[in-house]
Image (cartoon, rainbow, N blue to C red; front, side, top):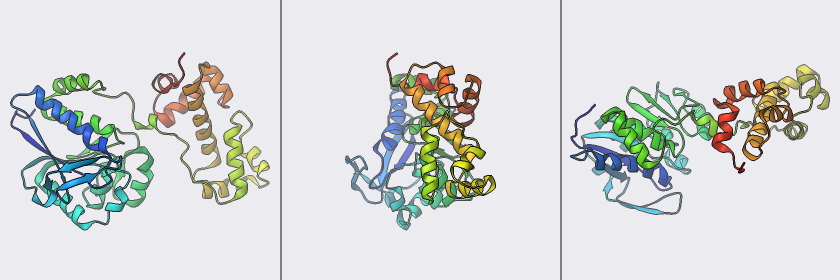
Length: 325
């Protein structure tokens, strides 16, 4: 646990950043300021230029200190993310500035797609990291030297922190406070903000598991639609190959090449996706849900959910059910 000397937290933003990526961590650090005397954190937002920075949400914020004017020491460097982050990955001034600040910081962190900025600046080479579940594959593809953690809400690898999407920045900031000042303070902040100190489950529970490629073949696209709309039918490879008028071997090869996953895995993902919708929108029993999506037994439904979403069907329903029961 660190002492109560003020720790400077520098948060890097850019045009198009997501407001909550900054606001979530700021609220956590600001809550700690109110609970510890003397105040334990000083938060300094920065951007390439001082002045107005427009968020991707259409709201403008005023940054008083330009990135080049930030000098050490820095306790924690945080890089926000945003839908437009790709537009900034070729900005040498931003990348060089982030790398410079990181060298002065005790630890460096990213929220959501801010991980792409850290990776492009070379700060995640050989490190474990995470980002929003929709961007995990892109982070792995673009930066093969980074070990991408798919289900983590946040990752710490040798003082290089990264978090999953958007609100996971709050989870990240709480973990940083806990590291600095203990879990008791972090718990008090979590209660005040009405959030979990340790959110149950990882980020997979928030994703739609059916994120696969659309095949080039019109016949396979039609077959995908048929699979998704007939989860309780015979979706074995022999049955699907017959429907596609192909041999089993040829069908499996072509389907895997064009969709990105083997047909058996696609079927399981499709059935999981169908089960998610039923659990969210109906009060059908787990046995009924399992039958309707072609998984047969509640035990099979449970195994599939744990494998793909890392939560049980019952837990998923409690967290995401949209119908009053």
